[in-house]
Length: 131
Image 1 (cartoon, rainbow, N blue to C red):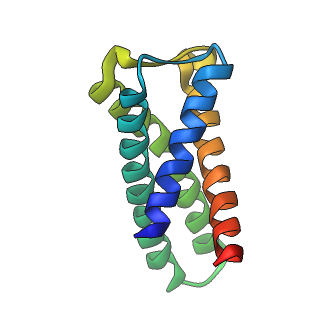
Image 2 (cartoon, rainbow, N blue to C red):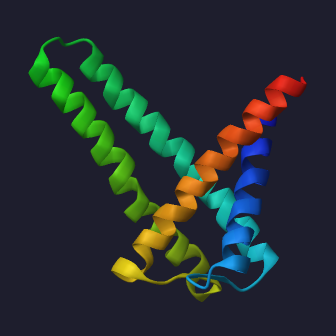
């Protein structure tokens, strides 16, 4: 439970820092960013669960062909999920949050998600060392 709370707080900080210091990310209010952080955390966990499940199916098979398909499917799920996440954020929050720039904001969104994942990992490592 504490792991998800830490991840959620890290996501919230990252989203708000991007909104404050980068013109390609615009958020109307703190509550909008909180909803976005919760939604993205849920979607990230669902994506990782799906990737692990599909990867587990490939783990039982051997050979280059299956190994290639395992890594390709992981990439496809992890990359494709960003479009699903962006669509979900747009559907739930509408004009409350906006990503601009290359590819209609997809690049900015991917950078925010990568920043969130990096911050989650950093904060989790610090928390484990302090515990």
